[in-house]
Length: 296
Image (tube, rainbow, N blue to C red; front, side, top):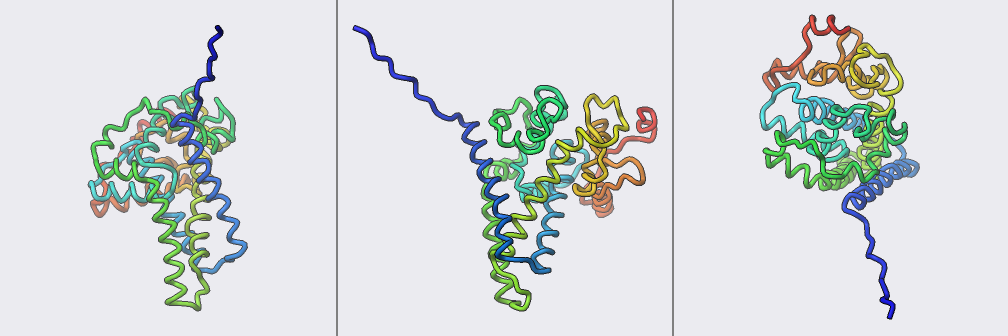
């Protein structure tokens, strides 16, 4: 008698579920911008959006990127946590995940293993699609043991979703408080949530994502021997506090400074230099004049 064979149970993998979850969250946050139609804008709401755009941007540039991913300077454990918190507030993933992914980008830049290369994949995938791909959430081959030894960083990475939820509650609460104390400002809980969280986050997202997409296609290459297609793009650099000098960075990834010419404004580096004056950060790594001229 013929045996009846039932089809194997199929289900989504952990990586697929994670990708779908993050894609859904990101789509909802994008759609949240549309609420501005009903909330309008006030000077206070715009100012809050701008302030947190700067906080998030510096958290990514100085913290997630130059410190955690590349260890281009040293700081105290306390300020290390502050940088991790600022970076987490940008809603781009946990600090260990972000750093591991970025280290992988440098190791395999514009090669098949590079998750967000517009050369290997396409512009959309490099800009946003890779974050909605299950490949982004597979167990990384590049470990961040230097970061994982700090329990507070591991906790912040593990419970990263709560950072998002806290911001939503905090911005709404701030709007309600401002409306209660200073009704003449014309704010509301929803308005501050829309501007401080949704709009500020989405603008920061796409500014950061342009480093992956735009800066590997458009711009100038000072270092054609960088081993990839990275470009320096002034516009992206302006939006990301110095991250747009991407070809410079790919040549000297360990450098705390990305802008090497006087006109290559690098706000993150200027702030790091200021912080070093007060002893908050130290041992900033920068290329020597000989290194810069020898490889120009």
